[in-house]
Length: 121
Image (cartoon, rainbow, N blue to C red; front, side, top):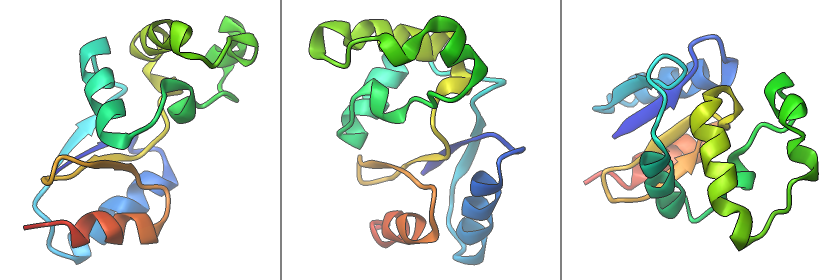
């Protein structure tokens, strides 16, 4: 299990606290310091079952500078969104947990973290 996090984020800290309380075996990826590649983002999106615009923090300054609010949210624009996330990792919603069963979740609440933990083998 891996958790992509920003240590300054309270939701990330809460998720880590819950993982620790449950004795979960996980690795931390500080995705702002170690940004995911476009290929890694594609894989995580596949595991999440989401589109890139669904994990984009559209209120960030970089999103506004790029004009993301006006970008089409359609299949033909998917790669453009992925490239923007790879180039500006601060736009990626957090925390994201990749579970051992091949799934992933945007774990912004305790219930989602517990759901991921329930999938442990």
